[in-house]
Amino acid sequence: MKKLVYTILLYQILFFSSIEATAGNLKITLENSNNLKRAYFAGGCFWCMEESFDKIRGVIKSTSGYSGGMLKNPTYKQVTYEDTGHVETIEIVYDPTKTSYKNLLKIFWKNIDPFDKYGQFCDKGKSYRSVAFFQNKMEKKIINQSIKELEKQFNSEIVTLVWKFDKFYKAEDYHQNYYQNNFLKYLAYKKACQREEVLNKIWK
Figure (cartoon, rainbow, N blue to C red):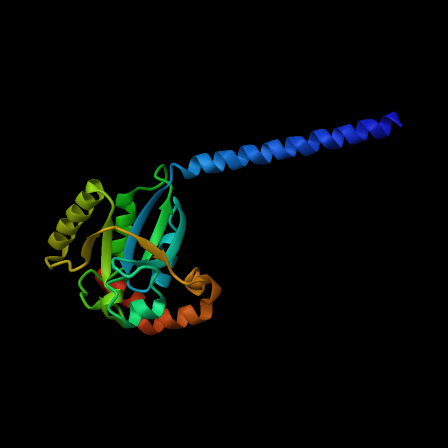
């Protein structure tokens, strides 16, 4: 009988210790989340931009969505076929102790055509224009300085837009992680768009 009581007590101790440990881990996660930052970029197809940033050390998560326009809670159809002012945008959640806004901006440049004012690659139209969004004076300064350096490097005007960030609207669920969930379709699209070929010519 005593053995049974001790066994029950041991299970209770282990159970509550497990709860405390889980709560402790959750608390640590929540505390860390307060230190995370967000960055916003538009580089044409947001599926491709997600793929480009997800593999970067320090990037916690990327989300496809819309930003830059006035219409609240826009749909993909509205953004693509109507003049909402929005562009396909990704929200990047990152750990500033592992990467920086300046580094993310470099990744952004290397994955777009900064000389195309009509869109990106095979996607043309206002919603596919490239945009570097800034949330504060420091980010704006970093973007403008980066543009000056690139224009000097290429001896050509950078037409990527620089906009003050306002609001981000998450895109429909089927757009999230599209490059993973629909790998073959995504691969076919990216190949037909010749995205990698163009990027290799620009950033060789």
